[in-house]
Image 1 (cartoon, rainbow, N blue to C red):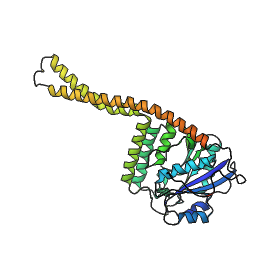
Image 2: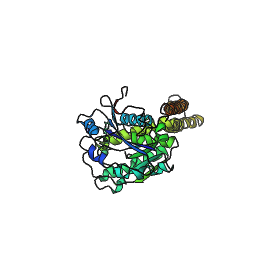
Image 3: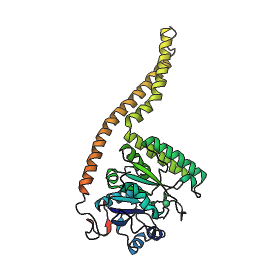
Image 4: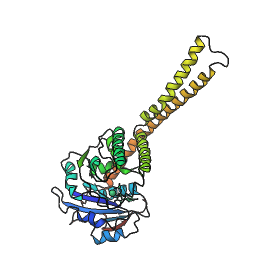
Length: 337
Ligand SMILES: Nc1nc2c(ncn2[C@@H]2O[C@H](COP(=O)(O)OP(=O)(O)O)[C@@H](O)[C@H]2O)c(=O)[nH]1
Ligand SMILES: [Mg+2]
């Protein structure tokens, strides 16, 4: 079993040493443990620190691409390197790396495809009451959208089995954490949670500039993803108010018409309003049907992507210390990202 621990980094020279120091050197059931950083245009010498500390694989994204792209680049490279399990953790040493054995245990025992470290947000002393409440609502919404339990949907401390990593393709740019849970739910992957205690923060979050911006972006991402995966349901739901109000207005007009109270210029507003709203409702429903047909194609494309990735990253040459990984050690400059 080959484990790769990937750490997306954006200016983490300060905290990377502490993060790496806590990573276990041996884990029962794992033959090789390797580390990887995905540097996103850091300007503080993160790469030099990583090299000095002997990080096994360093990916350098050209320019600054954002966390979602860095995360996906990491997953893809881990697959090419022959990883059986991929752990993602933060470079700010927020997560307890010593808990990695517990995190990967359900995957080793084939009880889960994705394991998420649950920070038990409601008990974390340095989270504000507002952040705790937002977290609760967020978990509830993600659970509704994905159909799976999500006590800590935004935790970045996670383990993915090779199979789960092959199935992931992050499409949005803001929050890969929510997107991967929703994808897992829609693709029938098994997601489980392991309670963890987080370390005290060493700095402010780079991702969450303000609670309001975070909620706005996350809500947009969840809605978009829900529409990706459940287009017919989404558009039918959107059409309901138009159809209901439109029908009401139309029936009102018909009532006056058949009781002889509607005449030239009287109650015509109800007729116009009812007709317009019903047309909008009908168009929304038809959009849903078209989007549903397109979604069926996307599912086929996803299955093709999965098979291509599986062939591309086939483990003919498993990466072990005696058998060097198919990708050369050192800095990999992944152009095209
Ligand atoms: N590649 C990349 N990584 C980032 C970026 N912003 C933050 N990170 C990394 O993502 C991880 C989480 O960031 P952090 O600021 O701790 O966010 P939080 O823990 O969610 O509050 C850390 O390892 C950061 O170095 C970015 O723009 N690009
Ligand atoms: Mg952090």
